[in-house]
Amino acid sequence: MKNKKKISKLLFFSKYYKPYIGIIILDLLCASLSTVCELVLPMIVRYITQTAALGASPLLIGTVLRMGLLYMFLRLVDTAANYYMANTGHVMGAHIETDMRRDLFSHLMKLSYSYYDNAKVGQIMSRISNDLFDITEFAHHCPEELFICGIKIIGSFIILSGINLPLTLMLFALLPLMLISVAFFRKGMKDAFKKQREQIGELNSQVEDCLLGIRVVKSFANEEKEKERFEKGNTQFFNRKKTSYKYMARFQACTRFFDGVMYVAIIVAGSLFMIKGYITAADLVAYILYIQTLITSIRKIVEFTEQFQKGITGIERFTEIMEVKPEIEDYPQAVELKNVSGDICFNNITFSYSADGGEVLSNIYIDVKKGENIAIVGPSGGGKTTLCSLIPRFYELSGGDITIDGISIKDIKLRSLRDSIGVVQQDVYLFSGTVKENITYGKRDATDEEIIKAAKNADAHEFIMSLPDGYDTYVGERGIKLSGGQKQRIFIARIFLKNPPILILDEATSALDNESELIVQKSLERLAKNRTTFTIAHRLTTIKNATKIIVLTKDGISETGTHSELMAKGGDYAKLYGLYTSI
View 1 (spheres, rainbow, N blue to C red):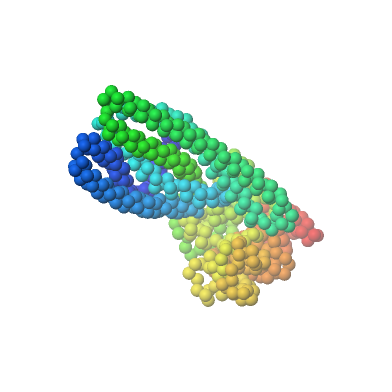
View 2: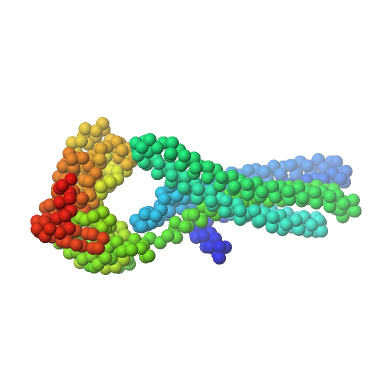
Protein backbone atom coordinates (compact mmCIF):
# COMPACT_ATOMS: atom_id res chain seq x y z
CA MET A 1 0.00 0.00 0.00
CA LYS A 2 2.84 2.37 0.92
CA ASN A 3 4.67 1.57 -2.33
CA LYS A 4 1.50 2.32 -4.31
CA LYS A 5 1.19 5.69 -2.59
CA LYS A 6 4.84 6.44 -3.28
CA ILE A 7 4.44 5.50 -6.96
CA SER A 8 1.34 7.68 -7.25
CA LYS A 9 3.24 10.62 -5.74
CA LEU A 10 6.14 10.10 -8.16
CA LEU A 11 3.68 9.92 -11.07
CA PHE A 12 2.12 13.16 -9.84
CA PHE A 13 5.58 14.73 -9.69
CA SER A 14 6.57 13.41 -13.15
CA LYS A 15 4.12 15.78 -14.86
CA TYR A 16 6.49 18.64 -14.02
CA TYR A 17 9.05 17.14 -16.43
CA LYS A 18 6.70 17.45 -19.41
CA PRO A 19 7.51 21.07 -20.43
CA TYR A 20 11.24 20.27 -20.31
CA ILE A 21 11.29 16.91 -22.09
CA GLY A 22 13.66 18.29 -24.78
CA ILE A 23 16.16 19.40 -22.13
CA ILE A 24 15.94 16.00 -20.41
CA ILE A 25 16.59 14.11 -23.66
CA LEU A 26 19.61 16.28 -24.46
CA ASP A 27 20.79 15.96 -20.83
CA LEU A 28 20.61 12.16 -21.03
CA LEU A 29 22.38 12.22 -24.41
CA CYS A 30 25.21 14.23 -22.80
CA ALA A 31 25.20 11.76 -19.91
CA SER A 32 25.60 8.92 -22.46
CA LEU A 33 28.56 10.63 -24.14
CA SER A 34 30.22 11.29 -20.79
CA THR A 35 29.72 7.67 -19.74
CA VAL A 36 31.10 6.30 -23.01
CA CYS A 37 34.22 8.42 -22.52
CA GLU A 38 34.69 6.88 -19.09
CA LEU A 39 34.12 3.31 -20.31
CA VAL A 40 36.58 3.67 -23.20
CA LEU A 41 39.62 4.51 -21.03
CA PRO A 42 40.15 0.98 -19.57
CA MET A 43 39.91 -0.46 -23.11
CA ILE A 44 42.56 2.01 -24.34
CA VAL A 45 44.85 1.05 -21.45
CA ARG A 46 44.24 -2.66 -22.17
CA TYR A 47 45.03 -2.21 -25.86
CA ILE A 48 48.27 -0.31 -25.16
CA THR A 49 49.32 -2.88 -22.53
CA GLN A 50 48.72 -5.75 -24.95
CA THR A 51 50.64 -3.95 -27.74
CA ALA A 52 53.53 -3.20 -25.40
CA ALA A 53 53.68 -6.87 -24.44
CA LEU A 54 54.41 -7.74 -28.08
CA GLY A 55 57.58 -5.61 -27.96
CA ALA A 56 56.83 -3.66 -31.15
CA SER A 57 58.28 -0.31 -30.12
CA PRO A 58 57.72 1.68 -33.37
CA LEU A 59 54.12 0.47 -33.49
CA LEU A 60 53.69 1.24 -29.77
CA ILE A 61 54.77 4.89 -30.18
CA GLY A 62 52.28 5.45 -32.99
CA THR A 63 49.57 3.64 -31.10
CA VAL A 64 50.14 5.66 -27.94
CA LEU A 65 49.94 8.92 -29.88
CA ARG A 66 46.74 7.86 -31.68
CA MET A 67 45.18 6.61 -28.45
CA GLY A 68 46.25 9.80 -26.68
CA LEU A 69 44.59 11.96 -29.37
CA LEU A 70 41.49 9.79 -29.30
CA TYR A 71 41.21 10.06 -25.52
CA MET A 72 41.87 13.83 -25.66
CA PHE A 73 39.02 14.18 -28.13
CA LEU A 74 36.78 12.10 -25.88
CA ARG A 75 37.75 14.28 -22.92
CA LEU A 76 36.72 17.41 -24.82
CA VAL A 77 33.38 15.78 -25.59
CA ASP A 78 33.08 14.78 -21.93
CA THR A 79 33.88 18.36 -20.79
CA ALA A 80 31.21 19.87 -23.07
CA ALA A 81 28.66 17.24 -22.01
CA ASN A 82 29.32 17.81 -18.31
CA TYR A 83 29.09 21.58 -18.75
CA TYR A 84 25.64 21.17 -20.29
CA MET A 85 24.53 18.81 -17.51
CA ALA A 86 25.87 21.05 -14.73
CA ASN A 87 24.39 24.22 -16.24
CA THR A 88 21.24 23.55 -18.25
CA GLY A 89 20.36 20.45 -16.25
CA HIS A 90 20.42 22.38 -12.99
CA VAL A 91 18.45 25.23 -14.54
CA MET A 92 15.81 22.69 -15.53
CA GLY A 93 15.65 21.58 -11.89
CA ALA A 94 15.23 25.21 -10.84
CA HIS A 95 12.43 25.60 -13.41
CA ILE A 96 10.63 22.59 -11.95
CA GLU A 97 11.09 23.99 -8.43
CA THR A 98 9.65 27.33 -9.59
CA ASP A 99 6.68 25.63 -11.24
CA MET A 100 5.99 23.55 -8.13
CA ARG A 101 6.26 26.57 -5.83
CA ARG A 102 3.86 28.48 -8.09
CA ASP A 103 1.36 25.60 -8.06
CA LEU A 104 1.69 25.12 -4.31
CA PHE A 105 1.11 28.82 -3.59
CA SER A 106 -1.80 28.90 -6.03
CA HIS A 107 -3.31 25.86 -4.29
CA LEU A 108 -2.82 27.46 -0.87
CA MET A 109 -4.79 30.46 -2.12
CA LYS A 110 -7.71 28.13 -2.93
CA LEU A 111 -7.90 26.55 0.51
CA SER A 112 -10.59 27.85 2.83
CA TYR A 113 -10.42 29.32 6.32
CA SER A 114 -10.95 25.89 7.86
CA TYR A 115 -7.60 24.65 6.53
CA TYR A 116 -5.71 27.60 8.02
CA ASP A 117 -7.60 27.23 11.30
CA ASN A 118 -5.67 23.98 11.83
CA ALA A 119 -2.43 24.59 9.88
CA LYS A 120 0.85 26.02 11.15
CA VAL A 121 2.28 28.74 8.94
CA GLY A 122 5.86 27.69 9.84
CA GLN A 123 5.18 24.18 8.53
CA ILE A 124 3.73 25.58 5.32
CA MET A 125 6.74 27.88 4.91
CA SER A 126 9.08 24.91 5.36
CA ARG A 127 7.28 23.03 2.59
CA ILE A 128 7.27 25.94 0.19
CA SER A 129 10.98 26.69 0.72
CA ASN A 130 13.24 23.99 2.22
CA ASP A 131 11.42 20.97 0.79
CA LEU A 132 11.39 22.43 -2.71
CA PHE A 133 15.14 23.16 -2.57
CA ASP A 134 15.72 19.42 -2.17
CA ILE A 135 13.32 18.67 -4.99
CA THR A 136 15.39 20.89 -7.32
CA GLU A 137 18.43 18.64 -6.93
CA PHE A 138 16.28 15.54 -7.09
CA ALA A 139 14.54 16.68 -10.30
CA HIS A 140 17.85 17.17 -12.10
CA HIS A 141 19.98 14.35 -10.70
CA CYS A 142 17.40 11.56 -10.41
CA PRO A 143 17.04 10.71 -14.13
CA GLU A 144 20.62 11.70 -14.92
CA GLU A 145 22.41 9.73 -12.18
CA LEU A 146 20.26 6.63 -12.57
CA PHE A 147 20.79 6.70 -16.34
CA ILE A 148 24.57 7.14 -16.04
CA CYS A 149 24.95 4.46 -13.39
CA GLY A 150 22.75 2.09 -15.37
CA ILE A 151 24.87 2.52 -18.52
CA LYS A 152 28.11 2.10 -16.55
CA ILE A 153 26.97 -1.07 -14.80
CA ILE A 154 25.44 -2.66 -17.91
CA GLY A 155 28.31 -1.48 -20.14
CA SER A 156 30.91 -2.79 -17.70
CA PHE A 157 29.14 -6.15 -17.49
CA ILE A 158 29.06 -6.55 -21.29
CA ILE A 159 32.71 -5.54 -21.77
CA LEU A 160 34.00 -7.61 -18.85
CA SER A 161 31.95 -10.63 -19.92
CA GLY A 162 33.72 -10.44 -23.30
CA ILE A 163 37.09 -10.51 -21.53
CA ASN A 164 36.36 -13.28 -19.00
CA LEU A 165 32.84 -14.47 -18.19
CA PRO A 166 33.54 -16.55 -15.01
CA LEU A 167 35.43 -13.69 -13.34
CA THR A 168 32.68 -11.26 -14.36
CA LEU A 169 29.92 -13.44 -12.93
CA MET A 170 31.84 -13.75 -9.67
CA LEU A 171 32.26 -9.97 -9.51
CA PHE A 172 28.60 -9.19 -10.20
CA ALA A 173 27.46 -11.91 -7.79
CA LEU A 174 28.65 -9.59 -5.00
CA LEU A 175 26.32 -6.76 -6.12
CA PRO A 176 23.05 -8.33 -4.85
CA LEU A 177 24.63 -8.83 -1.42
CA MET A 178 25.63 -5.19 -1.41
CA LEU A 179 22.17 -4.00 -2.53
CA ILE A 180 20.42 -6.11 0.13
CA SER A 181 22.66 -4.63 2.83
CA VAL A 182 22.11 -1.11 1.51
CA ALA A 183 18.33 -1.60 1.41
CA PHE A 184 18.43 -2.57 5.09
CA PHE A 185 19.51 0.97 6.04
CA ARG A 186 17.44 2.81 3.41
CA LYS A 187 14.14 2.80 5.32
CA GLY A 188 15.81 4.16 8.45
CA MET A 189 17.32 6.99 6.40
CA LYS A 190 13.98 7.86 4.81
CA ASP A 191 12.12 7.98 8.14
CA ALA A 192 14.92 10.02 9.72
CA PHE A 193 14.89 12.59 6.91
CA LYS A 194 11.10 12.91 7.08
CA LYS A 195 11.16 13.51 10.84
CA GLN A 196 13.97 16.03 10.31
CA ARG A 197 11.82 17.97 7.83
CA GLU A 198 8.83 17.92 10.18
CA GLN A 199 10.95 19.22 13.05
CA ILE A 200 12.42 22.12 11.05
CA GLY A 201 8.84 23.05 10.16
CA GLU A 202 7.93 23.06 13.86
CA LEU A 203 11.01 25.14 14.64
CA ASN A 204 10.12 27.65 11.90
CA SER A 205 6.59 27.85 13.25
CA GLN A 206 7.84 28.51 16.77
CA VAL A 207 10.28 31.22 15.62
CA GLU A 208 7.58 32.92 13.54
CA ASP A 209 5.13 32.81 16.46
CA CYS A 210 7.69 34.36 18.81
CA LEU A 211 8.85 37.10 16.43
CA LEU A 212 5.32 38.12 15.46
CA GLY A 213 4.49 38.39 19.15
CA ILE A 214 7.82 39.95 20.17
CA ARG A 215 6.13 42.94 21.80
CA VAL A 216 4.05 40.66 24.00
CA VAL A 217 7.18 38.66 24.85
CA LYS A 218 9.03 41.80 25.92
CA SER A 219 6.08 43.29 27.78
CA PHE A 220 5.94 40.16 29.97
CA ALA A 221 9.76 39.98 30.17
CA ASN A 222 9.56 36.42 28.89
CA GLU A 223 12.69 36.47 26.72
CA GLU A 224 14.31 33.71 28.78
CA LYS A 225 11.20 31.55 28.55
CA GLU A 226 11.15 31.94 24.76
CA LYS A 227 14.87 31.09 24.64
CA GLU A 228 14.12 27.92 26.59
CA ARG A 229 11.30 27.01 24.19
CA PHE A 230 13.55 27.65 21.23
CA GLU A 231 16.42 25.70 22.78
CA LYS A 232 14.11 22.73 23.29
CA GLY A 233 12.95 22.80 19.67
CA ASN A 234 16.48 23.44 18.40
CA THR A 235 17.80 20.48 20.40
CA GLN A 236 15.04 18.25 19.06
CA PHE A 237 16.01 19.27 15.52
CA PHE A 238 19.66 18.52 16.30
CA ASN A 239 18.72 15.08 17.63
CA ARG A 240 16.65 14.35 14.52
CA LYS A 241 19.54 15.43 12.32
CA LYS A 242 21.99 13.36 14.39
CA THR A 243 19.78 10.29 13.87
CA SER A 244 19.65 10.84 10.12
CA TYR A 245 23.46 11.16 10.01
CA LYS A 246 23.77 7.92 12.01
CA TYR A 247 21.74 6.05 9.40
CA MET A 248 23.68 7.74 6.62
CA ALA A 249 27.01 6.74 8.23
CA ARG A 250 25.88 3.11 8.47
CA PHE A 251 24.80 3.30 4.87
CA GLN A 252 28.15 4.62 3.67
CA ALA A 253 30.18 2.27 5.91
CA CYS A 254 28.31 -0.67 4.39
CA THR A 255 29.13 0.40 0.83
CA ARG A 256 32.79 1.08 1.64
CA PHE A 257 33.09 -2.40 3.12
CA PHE A 258 31.74 -3.95 -0.08
CA ASP A 259 34.09 -1.74 -2.12
CA GLY A 260 36.98 -3.45 -0.35
CA VAL A 261 35.43 -6.90 -0.75
CA MET A 262 35.08 -6.39 -4.53
CA TYR A 263 38.70 -5.20 -4.87
CA VAL A 264 40.03 -8.13 -2.83
CA ALA A 265 37.90 -10.63 -4.75
CA ILE A 266 39.08 -9.42 -8.16
CA ILE A 267 42.75 -9.04 -7.22
CA VAL A 268 42.92 -12.50 -5.62
CA ALA A 269 40.73 -14.31 -8.16
CA GLY A 270 42.24 -12.37 -11.09
CA SER A 271 45.78 -13.20 -10.00
CA LEU A 272 44.89 -16.92 -9.73
CA PHE A 273 43.26 -16.77 -13.20
CA MET A 274 46.41 -15.09 -14.59
CA ILE A 275 48.67 -17.76 -13.02
CA LYS A 276 46.52 -20.47 -14.60
CA GLY A 277 46.64 -18.66 -17.95
CA TYR A 278 42.88 -17.92 -18.09
CA ILE A 279 43.50 -14.18 -18.30
CA THR A 280 46.33 -11.89 -19.46
CA ALA A 281 47.98 -9.11 -17.48
CA ALA A 282 46.34 -6.53 -19.80
CA ASP A 283 42.93 -8.07 -19.08
CA LEU A 284 43.54 -7.92 -15.32
CA VAL A 285 44.55 -4.25 -15.57
CA ALA A 286 41.33 -3.54 -17.50
CA TYR A 287 39.35 -5.44 -14.86
CA ILE A 288 40.82 -3.38 -12.03
CA LEU A 289 40.08 -0.15 -13.91
CA TYR A 290 36.50 -1.25 -14.55
CA ILE A 291 36.09 -2.14 -10.89
CA GLN A 292 36.97 1.49 -10.16
CA THR A 293 34.24 2.55 -12.61
CA LEU A 294 31.76 0.16 -10.99
CA ILE A 295 32.61 1.24 -7.46
CA THR A 296 32.41 4.91 -8.46
CA SER A 297 28.95 4.24 -9.93
CA ILE A 298 27.80 2.44 -6.81
CA ARG A 299 29.21 5.23 -4.62
CA LYS A 300 27.29 7.74 -6.72
CA ILE A 301 24.12 5.72 -6.18
CA VAL A 302 24.88 5.67 -2.44
CA GLU A 303 25.50 9.42 -2.35
CA PHE A 304 22.44 10.00 -4.46
CA THR A 305 20.33 7.87 -2.11
CA GLU A 306 20.59 10.60 0.55
CA GLN A 307 19.53 13.17 -2.03
CA PHE A 308 16.86 10.79 -3.30
CA GLN A 309 15.40 10.32 0.18
CA LYS A 310 15.36 14.08 0.77
CA GLY A 311 13.73 14.58 -2.62
CA ILE A 312 11.12 11.88 -2.02
CA THR A 313 10.38 13.33 1.42
CA GLY A 314 9.98 16.78 -0.16
CA ILE A 315 7.66 15.37 -2.85
CA GLU A 316 5.57 13.56 -0.24
CA ARG A 317 5.21 16.72 1.85
CA PHE A 318 4.44 18.73 -1.31
CA THR A 319 1.73 16.31 -2.43
CA GLU A 320 0.24 16.19 1.08
CA ILE A 321 -0.81 19.82 0.62
CA MET A 322 -1.65 19.49 -3.07
CA GLU A 323 -3.98 16.58 -2.27
CA VAL A 324 -5.99 18.69 0.20
CA LYS A 325 -9.22 19.38 -1.62
CA PRO A 326 -10.46 22.97 -1.37
CA GLU A 327 -13.71 22.86 0.60
CA ILE A 328 -15.08 25.87 -1.23
CA GLU A 329 -14.89 26.13 -5.02
CA ASP A 330 -16.91 27.59 -7.85
CA TYR A 331 -19.77 25.36 -8.90
CA PRO A 332 -19.94 24.59 -12.65
CA GLN A 333 -23.14 26.66 -12.98
CA ALA A 334 -21.74 29.61 -10.98
CA VAL A 335 -22.52 33.07 -12.40
CA GLU A 336 -21.11 36.57 -12.06
CA LEU A 337 -22.88 38.78 -9.53
CA LYS A 338 -23.79 41.99 -11.37
CA ASN A 339 -25.65 45.19 -10.47
CA VAL A 340 -25.90 44.15 -6.83
CA SER A 341 -28.79 45.63 -4.87
CA GLY A 342 -27.87 44.05 -1.57
CA ASP A 343 -30.97 42.06 -0.60
CA ILE A 344 -29.69 39.19 1.55
CA CYS A 345 -31.63 36.29 2.99
CA PHE A 346 -30.43 33.64 5.46
CA ASN A 347 -32.76 30.70 4.82
CA ASN A 348 -32.75 28.44 7.92
CA ILE A 349 -28.98 28.09 7.86
CA THR A 350 -27.04 25.66 10.02
CA PHE A 351 -23.29 25.59 10.53
CA SER A 352 -20.66 23.57 12.40
CA TYR A 353 -16.88 23.74 12.01
CA SER A 354 -16.50 19.98 11.64
CA ALA A 355 -18.70 17.02 10.80
CA ASP A 356 -18.43 15.63 14.32
CA GLY A 357 -18.50 19.01 16.07
CA GLY A 358 -21.46 20.74 17.67
CA GLU A 359 -23.55 23.24 15.73
CA VAL A 360 -22.41 26.85 16.08
CA LEU A 361 -25.51 28.16 14.29
CA SER A 362 -28.83 26.37 13.93
CA ASN A 363 -31.95 27.22 11.87
CA ILE A 364 -31.13 30.91 11.45
CA TYR A 365 -33.53 32.94 9.33
CA ILE A 366 -32.81 36.62 8.57
CA ASP A 367 -34.23 38.73 5.74
CA VAL A 368 -32.22 41.86 4.95
CA LYS A 369 -33.32 44.50 2.45
CA LYS A 370 -31.12 46.71 0.28
CA GLY A 371 -29.31 49.45 2.20
CA GLU A 372 -30.31 48.22 5.68
CA ASN A 373 -27.85 48.42 8.55
CA ILE A 374 -28.15 45.21 10.53
CA ALA A 375 -26.46 45.15 13.94
CA ILE A 376 -25.63 41.77 15.45
CA VAL A 377 -25.03 41.65 19.19
CA GLY A 378 -24.87 38.99 21.84
CA PRO A 379 -22.57 37.21 24.25
CA SER A 380 -19.12 36.04 23.20
CA GLY A 381 -19.20 32.67 21.44
CA GLY A 382 -22.72 33.16 20.11
CA GLY A 383 -21.58 32.93 16.48
CA LYS A 384 -21.76 36.59 15.41
CA THR A 385 -18.51 36.61 13.42
CA THR A 386 -19.19 33.12 12.09
CA LEU A 387 -22.60 34.23 10.78
CA CYS A 388 -21.07 37.11 8.83
CA SER A 389 -18.17 34.94 7.58
CA LEU A 390 -20.72 32.72 5.83
CA ILE A 391 -21.87 35.51 3.49
CA PRO A 392 -18.60 35.65 1.48
CA ARG A 393 -18.33 31.82 1.81
CA PHE A 394 -15.23 31.89 3.99
CA TYR A 395 -16.82 28.74 5.41
CA GLU A 396 -19.31 26.40 3.75
CA LEU A 397 -22.81 26.08 5.16
CA SER A 398 -23.75 22.81 6.83
CA GLY A 399 -27.39 23.34 5.96
CA GLY A 400 -29.79 25.91 4.54
CA ASP A 401 -28.87 28.63 2.08
CA ILE A 402 -27.89 32.29 1.81
CA THR A 403 -29.07 34.33 -1.16
CA ILE A 404 -27.99 37.72 -2.49
CA ASP A 405 -30.59 39.39 -4.70
CA GLY A 406 -32.33 36.02 -4.86
CA ILE A 407 -29.24 34.10 -6.06
CA SER A 408 -27.73 31.42 -3.84
CA ILE A 409 -24.17 32.30 -2.87
CA LYS A 410 -23.21 28.77 -4.00
CA ASP A 411 -24.29 29.73 -7.52
CA ILE A 412 -22.13 32.86 -7.56
CA LYS A 413 -18.48 32.81 -8.62
CA LEU A 414 -16.30 33.27 -5.53
CA ARG A 415 -14.31 36.17 -6.97
CA SER A 416 -17.49 37.97 -8.00
CA LEU A 417 -19.09 37.30 -4.60
CA ARG A 418 -16.14 38.54 -2.58
CA ASP A 419 -15.60 41.55 -4.85
CA SER A 420 -19.10 42.62 -3.80
CA ILE A 421 -18.36 42.43 -0.07
CA GLY A 422 -16.09 44.59 2.08
CA VAL A 423 -14.96 43.34 5.50
CA VAL A 424 -13.51 45.60 8.20
CA GLN A 425 -12.31 43.68 11.24
CA GLN A 426 -11.09 44.57 14.71
CA ASP A 427 -7.55 43.43 13.95
CA VAL A 428 -6.91 44.91 10.51
CA TYR A 429 -4.03 43.56 8.47
CA LEU A 430 -1.65 45.84 6.60
CA PHE A 431 0.95 44.30 4.33
CA SER A 432 4.62 45.17 4.42
CA GLY A 433 4.86 48.04 1.95
CA THR A 434 3.83 51.66 1.53
CA VAL A 435 0.62 53.39 2.52
CA LYS A 436 -0.31 53.70 -1.14
CA GLU A 437 0.28 50.00 -1.81
CA ASN A 438 -1.95 49.08 1.12
CA ILE A 439 -4.79 51.34 0.03
CA THR A 440 -4.65 50.14 -3.59
CA TYR A 441 -4.96 46.54 -2.39
CA GLY A 442 -8.68 47.28 -2.80
CA LYS A 443 -8.21 48.31 -6.44
CA ARG A 444 -4.85 47.69 -8.10
CA ASP A 445 -5.38 50.05 -11.05
CA ALA A 446 -6.62 53.02 -8.99
CA THR A 447 -5.47 56.50 -9.99
CA ASP A 448 -3.83 58.91 -7.54
CA GLU A 449 -7.04 60.95 -7.49
CA GLU A 450 -9.08 57.88 -6.52
CA ILE A 451 -6.58 56.95 -3.81
CA ILE A 452 -6.64 60.43 -2.26
CA LYS A 453 -10.46 60.55 -2.45
CA ALA A 454 -10.70 57.18 -0.65
CA ALA A 455 -8.23 58.36 2.01
CA LYS A 456 -10.21 61.58 2.56
CA ASN A 457 -13.45 59.61 2.92
CA ALA A 458 -11.69 57.48 5.56
CA ASP A 459 -10.37 60.60 7.36
CA ALA A 460 -6.86 59.34 6.62
CA HIS A 461 -5.49 61.88 4.12
CA GLU A 462 -4.43 64.44 6.72
CA PHE A 463 -2.35 62.08 8.85
CA ILE A 464 -0.92 60.36 5.74
CA MET A 465 0.40 63.69 4.45
CA SER A 466 2.09 64.26 7.83
CA LEU A 467 4.09 61.03 7.45
CA PRO A 468 7.75 61.33 6.32
CA ASP A 469 7.05 60.26 2.73
CA GLY A 470 3.31 60.78 2.58
CA TYR A 471 1.60 58.02 0.60
CA ASP A 472 5.00 56.44 -0.12
CA THR A 473 5.79 55.94 3.58
CA TYR A 474 6.78 52.39 4.50
CA VAL A 475 4.36 51.06 7.14
CA GLY A 476 6.50 48.16 8.43
CA GLU A 477 5.54 44.54 9.04
CA ARG A 478 1.78 44.36 9.68
CA GLY A 479 1.73 48.19 9.74
CA ILE A 480 3.73 48.31 12.97
CA LYS A 481 4.89 51.90 12.37
CA LEU A 482 1.32 53.19 12.58
CA SER A 483 -1.11 53.52 15.47
CA GLY A 484 -4.22 51.35 15.71
CA GLY A 485 -6.47 54.17 14.56
CA GLN A 486 -4.20 55.02 11.63
CA LYS A 487 -4.09 51.39 10.49
CA GLN A 488 -7.88 51.17 10.76
CA ARG A 489 -8.37 54.30 8.64
CA ILE A 490 -5.98 53.06 5.93
CA PHE A 491 -7.91 49.81 5.88
CA ILE A 492 -11.19 51.70 5.59
CA ALA A 493 -9.69 53.71 2.71
CA ARG A 494 -8.92 50.36 1.07
CA ILE A 495 -12.62 49.41 1.36
CA PHE A 496 -13.76 52.84 0.05
CA LEU A 497 -11.58 52.23 -3.00
CA LYS A 498 -13.02 48.74 -3.47
CA ASN A 499 -16.52 50.26 -3.20
CA PRO A 500 -18.50 47.09 -2.40
CA PRO A 501 -22.32 47.17 -2.19
CA ILE A 502 -22.27 44.92 0.91
CA LEU A 503 -20.31 45.74 4.05
CA ILE A 504 -19.37 43.72 7.14
CA LEU A 505 -18.03 45.63 10.16
CA ASP A 506 -16.70 43.14 12.70
CA GLU A 507 -16.13 45.07 15.95
CA ALA A 508 -14.13 47.53 13.85
CA THR A 509 -13.61 50.08 16.64
CA SER A 510 -13.41 47.88 19.74
CA ALA A 511 -9.60 48.05 20.03
CA LEU A 512 -9.32 51.83 19.63
CA ASP A 513 -9.05 54.65 22.14
CA ASN A 514 -11.98 57.05 22.48
CA GLU A 515 -10.55 59.74 20.20
CA SER A 516 -9.60 57.28 17.45
CA GLU A 517 -12.96 55.53 17.83
CA LEU A 518 -14.86 58.75 17.15
CA ILE A 519 -12.83 59.45 14.00
CA VAL A 520 -13.10 55.88 12.72
CA GLN A 521 -16.81 55.67 13.60
CA LYS A 522 -17.54 58.71 11.46
CA SER A 523 -15.65 57.25 8.52
CA LEU A 524 -17.49 53.94 8.97
CA GLU A 525 -20.85 55.72 8.94
CA ARG A 526 -19.77 57.41 5.73
CA LEU A 527 -18.66 54.05 4.33
CA ALA A 528 -21.93 52.31 5.29
CA LYS A 529 -24.12 54.91 3.57
CA ASN A 530 -26.28 53.36 0.81
CA ARG A 531 -24.75 49.91 1.42
CA THR A 532 -26.26 46.81 2.98
CA THR A 533 -24.28 46.66 6.21
CA PHE A 534 -23.78 44.08 8.94
CA THR A 535 -22.29 45.52 12.12
CA ILE A 536 -20.97 43.26 14.86
CA ALA A 537 -20.52 45.40 17.95
CA HIS A 538 -19.89 45.09 21.65
CA ARG A 539 -20.07 48.88 22.15
CA LEU A 540 -23.85 49.00 21.96
CA THR A 541 -24.07 52.80 21.89
CA THR A 542 -22.62 52.73 18.34
CA ILE A 543 -25.57 50.76 16.92
CA LYS A 544 -28.54 52.67 18.36
CA ASN A 545 -29.44 53.92 14.87
CA ALA A 546 -29.25 50.50 13.18
CA THR A 547 -32.21 49.57 10.98
CA LYS A 548 -32.52 46.27 12.82
CA ILE A 549 -30.72 44.77 15.80
CA ILE A 550 -30.39 40.99 16.08
CA VAL A 551 -29.51 39.40 19.40
CA LEU A 552 -27.64 36.16 18.69
CA THR A 553 -26.95 33.66 21.47
CA LYS A 554 -25.70 30.07 21.54
CA ASP A 555 -29.35 29.00 21.27
CA GLY A 556 -29.97 31.09 18.14
CA ILE A 557 -31.70 34.44 17.57
CA SER A 558 -33.41 35.49 20.79
CA GLU A 559 -34.64 38.95 19.74
CA THR A 560 -34.97 41.16 16.67
CA GLY A 561 -35.99 44.82 16.42
CA THR A 562 -34.87 48.43 16.63
CA HIS A 563 -33.08 49.85 19.65
CA SER A 564 -36.23 51.42 21.08
CA GLU A 565 -38.33 48.30 20.44
CA LEU A 566 -35.84 46.00 22.14
CA MET A 567 -35.36 48.33 25.09
CA ALA A 568 -39.13 48.44 25.55
CA LYS A 569 -39.24 44.63 25.65
CA GLY A 570 -36.78 44.51 28.52
CA GLY A 571 -35.28 41.25 27.24
CA ASP A 572 -31.74 40.08 26.42
CA TYR A 573 -30.82 43.25 24.53
CA ALA A 574 -32.00 45.54 27.32
CA LYS A 575 -29.94 43.51 29.80
CA LEU A 576 -26.83 43.71 27.59
CA TYR A 577 -27.34 47.44 27.09
CA GLY A 578 -27.81 47.94 30.81
CA LEU A 579 -24.59 46.05 31.55
CA TYR A 580 -22.67 48.07 28.98
CA THR A 581 -23.92 51.50 30.09
CA SER A 582 -23.33 50.69 33.74
CA ILE A 583 -19.61 50.09 33.17
